[in-house]
Structures are given as C-alpha cells and as structure tokens.
Image 1 (tube, helix red, strand yellow):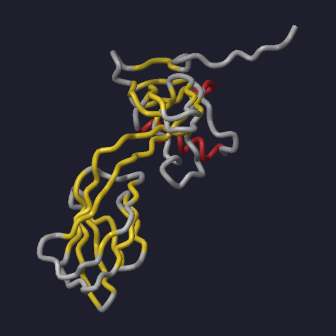
Image 2 (cartoon, rainbow, N blue to C red):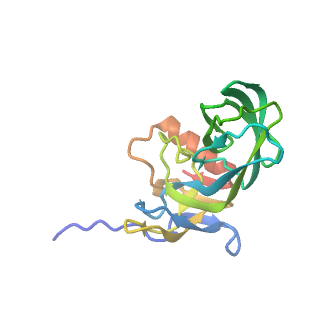
Image 3 (cartoon, rainbow, N blue to C red):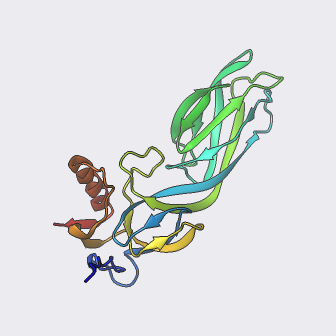
Length: 215
C-alpha cells in the first residue's frame, strides 16, 4: 500500500491557552506565504506615511518615498534640522512618543524608528529649527514565516500559525497564537536551516509573549 503522511491539524499543537480568544489574534497572511499549522511566524507592520513641511520653514527641501517597517509607529514623527549648510544639513528624528530615533543628513538615506527615507535639498537651504512632519497612518500586521536570517522583521518570532494557510493567490485572513499559551515543541515548524542557538533565541522571544514551548 502507498504510504501517506498525515498533515498537521488546526490547533493540535496547543497544550493549553487562555480563556475565550485571548491567546488568538486575527491577522492577514501576506501574499505568497504558505504556512502550516504550528509554524512559527513573524509579523511585519505595513503602514503608509506622508511628509509635510512645518509652517514657517525657510528651507524647501522635501522627503522622498517613505518606507514603514518593523518598529514603525502610528502618529507624527518630527524631523528637525540642527546643523544647516549650503545644500546640506544635519537633522534628528523623534517618533510619535517624542523618542529620538536617530540622526541623519540631507541627501543621505535615513533609517530609524521603523522609517526609511531621504530628505532632498531644495532651492532654499534649510535653517536650524526647520521641521518636517512625517505622519504614519494605521496599517496592518502581515504574517510571514519566521526567518532567523531575515532583516525586515521576519527574524523576530511573534507567534504560531493556528492552521494551514495558502496565500499563493493573494493575502488572506488567518488566526495565530500570540500570547498566554503552552505549545508542544515537537509539533512546531521551524526554518529548515535554523541552528540550535537560533531556535533557543526564538523560543525566548515567544516566551516573552507568554507562549511557553514545552519539550
């Protein structure tokens, strides 16, 4: 007789979870992702952002395309020119909570606080105190397979796929375990090339969320 390998069923990896739906979260599975039940996943924040000069600015430089990645916050970021110059200028960026998330320079790529952009020089040079307001609108958390070698947020374990999901034809809704649960470690699906130390680190990330991996 032909040998048949039985797949994983929805939720079978769960040893215990919180009452009601506290342990679960409805999410969007990113287009092209194919997940199996019990797969360790990551969540990538996908928001949109726009920039506008503050009233009273002297300089008329503009911000180009803005990317919102992991760590991005909804709200207004404030870019402030500190050291101006002819066709140049240094600045800092504060996030919506007023936290300094990095320093940058005109005409050079900036990355910090979940944002990526380049502030271009304009016809009129900036002066100290000129500001650009970058507003990040509410977006979605898209689920992808955990990848310990990722650099876009996929390297941060954020939960476990509750069921099997095939988003080959486009993003689809799904459910993940995100908090307050115990799961059977032998059932979890990890990247094929993950090393023992990397898996231990990822399990610690899950434990920080209240997801305990039982061995």
